[in-house]
Amino acid sequence: GLPFLPHEKWTVNFKTAPLFWFSQPGEEDLPLDPNGMVKPSDTNFLDTWEAMEDLVIKGLVKDIGVSNFNHEQLERLLNKPDLKIKPVTNQIECHPYHTQKNLISFCKARDVSVTAYRPLGGSREGTDLLNNPTIQRIAKHYGKSCAQILIRFQIQRNLIVIPKSTNPNRIQENIQVFDFELTEDHMDEIMSLDRHLRLVTFPT
Image (cartoon, rainbow, N blue to C red):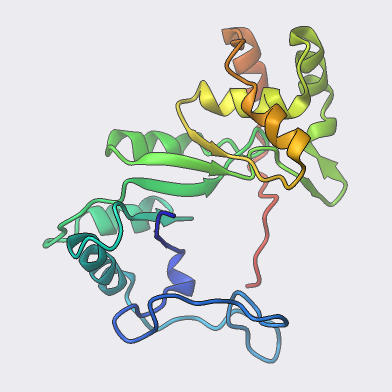
């Protein structure tokens, strides 16, 4: 897989820490303090990026990218004086309730692709994107599932889309999105659903 540099708060020091980590049963993916808050890192993510560049130079990985980087963090990395390798992608939460329009434009202008995770939205506080009437109406118009409409929406925005599923039928369905195209009006309708609502939450 593509190695990612996560959000600055969770940066680890690749120069002193093990190269790979494997979560054991009962372990947290993020280091938490006794109050359940994420332990902030004192590692500069630019130092971590240098270590990741070394992985590419040594031929251990092909490409490297970032995840959950905002405008300021990405600009800081791209303006790094001795930057050897640019991130190929910024992996971010992206769906019609959180279209990330400005951040996507920022990335594209700097030749950094965008990978949309959680493209189907999911559910939070009673909000379920798959139950949205606009999405359901558009899905019915094309004879497609709501999930297929949401995936196709991101494809037509020229994003890399990574829906998550463990159901073989749904995985197959998620691939069948290249035999139709959303009209410009339908794309605009879906874009208008933006609420700047994050459906993925992390400990803070």
